[in-house]
Every structure is written in C-alpha cells, then in structure tokens.
Amino acid sequence: MQTIDIRTTQNVTIEYELATLRERALAFFIDLLIVGVSYLLLIFVLLSTLGGVVAEGLLGRFILGLLPLVALMGYQFFSEAFANGQSWGKKALGIKVVRIDGEEPGLSDYFLRAIFHIIDSILSLGVLAGLLISSSPKNQRLGDMTANTTVIRVRHQQRFQLEDILKISSIENYQPVYPEVRHLREQDMLLIKQLIGRYRRYPNAAHARAVKEAAEHLATLLNITEVPADRIDFLKTLIRDYIVLTR
Image 1 (cartoon, rainbow, N blue to C red):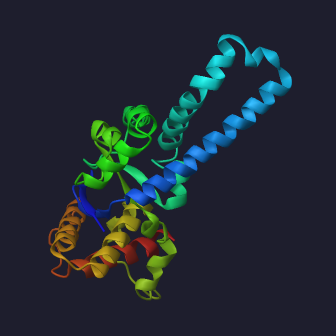
Image 2: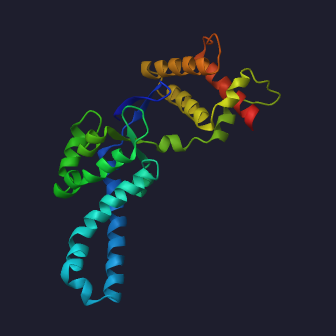
Image 3: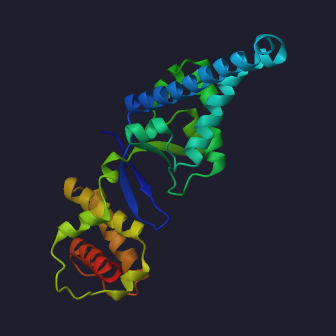
C-alpha cells in the first residue's frame, strides 16, 4: 500500500494511505452512474412535458450534447466542495480529497479537479487518469497535480469515535493531570487517537517522529514546560483528561 506524509497545519506529520487506482475508478463509476441516472430522469421529464421542443433546436442539442458533461463537472465540484472532499462515490469507497501541503482544499482546488476531468476521464476515456495515478509517486492525475491534491483512504479513520478512546484505560476516580487540555477540540483528540493507533499498527520511524512532534507541539500549546519521556503515555493522558473534563 502506497503512503504519503502530510504535514498538517498543526505542524505534525501524519502518514496516510493513498487511495488505489481501483478505489478511485470505482468511486468515479458510482458518481458517473448517479449523474447518468439523474440525466435520464431529466430527459424523461422534459420529453413528457415539452415533447418536440426538446428534440429540436438549440435546447435539444444542449440537453443531448453538453448537459451531461456540465452536469458531471458540476456534480464533481459541488459534491467535493460541500462534503469535505467526498463525492458520494468517494464516500462509498472510504476515500477523500486532501491537499498535499496539509491545508484544507479550497473551492478553486475542487474546481480545477472538476474541470480536468474533461481531459483525465472524458476525452481520454479514463486512460490518461489511470496511467498517471498508477505511475505518479503520489497517485495524482492531472487535476490533482494542478490543484496540488491527492486522494487518501479514510475508512480506517471513520471507525474511530470519541467513545472508543474510553477503551484505553479506566477513568473512574481519575484526577486530570493537564487541565488546560479542555481548550482543545474533539477533532484534536480524534487526531491524537488516530496517531496512537497508527503508531501501534506501524511502529516505524516516520510514525515515531510524528508522535514526538505531536507531543512537543501539544506541550507548547498547553504551556507544559517539559514533555514526558513516554510520548505515547503523555498523549493518552491528554485524551483521558479531555474526556474527564468535557464529558
């Protein structure tokens, strides 16, 4: 499985699994199916109501020729822009769009990705996108390269809920060690939980470095003068403290 290191806006490097060509192709097929069914329903309604007006003239040529392409581009743009980088197809496959520099993708990024589908997926029948995704180091098609994005797997992240953190250890009669942690967000705790889980699953140098940097960054945010030697235990303590102080 190919991976990519992305440095987040919190200056923490996280390793993500890149979505495979198969996953991205299946997601696009699902999206194509959704747009296709919607288009056929629209044609049926228009023919039923307007009849010959649709079949003739500029309106008819637009509906039969350009509308499917416009609809696909619009669907890709709006679904990714307003669903956190996940069209319905991507959501079904557990993958999402991210920026390589760790920033959140913007509307211009999603727009570029949608427009370049014309070259990547339509005019080349998907051949160009397939070749680039399978051969580029970061699994990028032209739209990704232009927008500085790629597609990662998030299915393993979605399994984590805040309630799962309670399984780390019992918190009964527990006295918080770092009360400042209450100023952090639930998303921060889930990121820490994910980082611990990834380190346990893949205890390599990259994840060890990510744990170290995350612990040091959090210590700075919370005005903790000295980071404990056991970084994992420190991160787990922050999670326990957060649960006790905010539940």
